[in-house]
Length: 321
Image 1 (cartoon, helix red, strand yellow):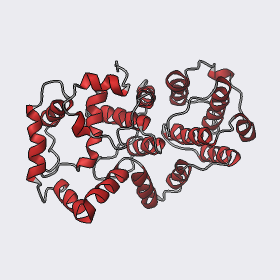
Image 2 (image 1 turned 90 degrees about the vertical axis):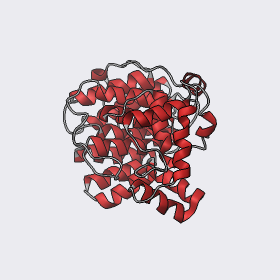
Image 3 (image 1 turned 180 degrees about the horizontal axis):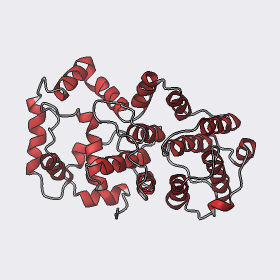
């Protein structure tokens, strides 16, 4: 889905609901306030006084929001806001489920939050991964190369096998003109010491969009940059974008190990003023793009094009720290 911009009245009702949820266990904490302020600034483009917003009942919100897609979007947003804190209170989960019931929607993120709350981590991991970026990438790999291709790519990532022809194709990107996407990808891999696809320990080609998003968005590869690029990817993703945000917050804020590709971190966004604002800004930046890079984008066809030209064509706004 494309991120939907609500009307002014719908935005106000949604903010009242967000505040109702985030104050279900007590006064609005500073990091919760920052999150709501960021949603206003970067997504809703409103400037309501948060302290003046009165609570809202699930029935009142349902009366304000009629479109099913918008209802799904706001309930998914409730979950990510709750996960942005240090912990999720039972009263917050109960409030989210009450709003979901009144709106007659139950996006996957609500069930993911309940699984997290109940510590059903095995099923939580499976569901979050299959819905985020890795799951669709593996499905694409299976569709294109079959089970044998999946096994070979996993073996390559584990350092047990090398596809020399594929690796040579990526090494040859060194010959592309400076400033092109292909040359910048080659520089990205060599500068960071990453293995090329096809080399031992190289990631499957179907995961390459993540690395190319680093280049197009201009985000670094440290923990901060990885969080920003995932939020950026969630924003431009048209299908189930909030599962990517849930993946990120479970991994980096709540320390849940989800895949072998990334080590979990506990409380990465805690006590860092501006960190959640950055995530929301990166998500909004991706949401305003004109293309979903995970849906049939032919990056090989783009490798000879200048990065700056691609940014203009794809609607990628400048990023300033």
